[in-house]
Picture 1 (cartoon, rainbow, N blue to C red):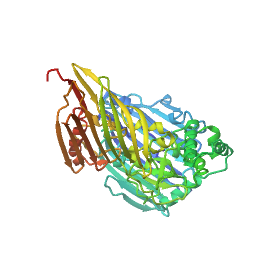
Picture 2 (cartoon, rainbow, N blue to C red):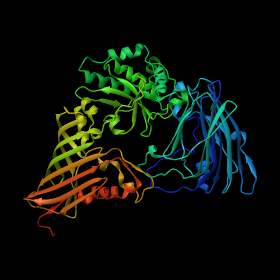
Picture 3 (cartoon, rainbow, N blue to C red):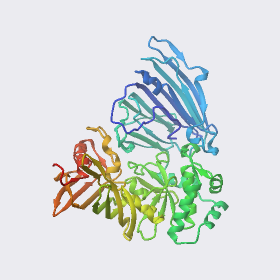
Picture 4 (cartoon, rainbow, N blue to C red):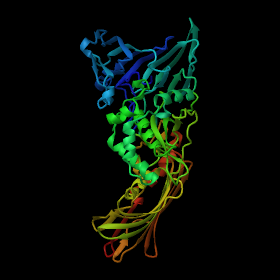
Length: 592
């Protein structure tokens, strides 16, 4: 029930710096949820907002309501605008237009879904638009009342009211995250009504690298427990006999176990279309495996079902899991809080499970990249999340050979955790060339015996640029490392926690024999910074005819609180300084 509707008020994330948007403001937003005695449900939405700038017309001049007309009925009670002089302009009939939701365009089985586009007319500066509608869901469409409501919107909200009305005999589990408030509870006429009131909520920040995990939200449901929710979902994602599946299995060559699993995975991703229809728009019910494979496309949940069933034929420990946000602790049963789905897979030679995406091929296990997310087994209805792993480190020792066109790099590389594309390397050794930036021309794997660890020897090159008699080359770095996180857009201050991909340690030792006729123009430096976020060390010096450059950074945590942000910037400014990761040579006879 989380996405009964989608407003333009929905959260907007971008990689721009934090800035307050006052193009419009929401004066009042109220959502009234009701679970009826027969199991049917309704949600009544009332909202009013004021336009402060002309851009506000574009950003809040329309509202969008997505629903399933086979099981839901939409009734719009009011849609009008009060102009500055008090004149009332009602939205005409042609202001209500139903279209196909964009995410259902390539999913024929879901082409019955509707998106009501509600346009306001008579908008002007200081005008206030009002909207009121009710969305009713038939009994049985949703298994339980189950909602996950983000409280911050794209615009400031002066007053936000949420009510939940349930039969007196129905237990409502509810929880607030990242905000404090106490609901008002009233009993009467065989009903219990919970009311939350929030005032003067700021708009959601648009700062880069923020996580929705840190935003205030309210979740509530009538599930008995999270285990009950998972058991119900397991029935809807139950494996069924499929001739198409059997044909896929027979088509895989009888090679080694891992090769068969990866071949099946690769073939599935190459031949199956991906639909982004959210699970709630089908009432958390899905097509069977045969239908999914024959149609050659599926939603994320459907692809999880089909892929897991295929791989289960090859790897008996394969299972499907639901991925939840970091804040979710399982004390409240919830399907609306599922962020994504994944497949739990074993890899021979590793003493832990790997999690792979049913939608796209990723270089490493999802439980490492999404460190801290919660993984609930769907097949077993397990109420305990799988334990996430965190091995994120890289060590590079490289010998450099200079020419005026390029520098040849011979490196011993060790990578673990999120920096380790174990599945891709197992699939194709040549893919290990993506470990390091620059043009990697040769790779020899030295070992993959330890959990989530790869040792490799790489031969690569980086280009040399000539400028006014100087020869300049930027040193290579690990793909997935701190340099690739694009932290240059961060501002000087932070109001919300900074959410990094993962904690990490990276170290590099470069040694360059200074060629005859050349001198080193790279400045000698010795820098070390240490604080509660981590450490950074950078040094450059000439020792016995060799240029030695050492770089090391450790970020001990991925969530940086606003009060820690200054310490983080102190480390990052050193690490990203191009002057500290560049080799500069010049002709020996040129002027210093």
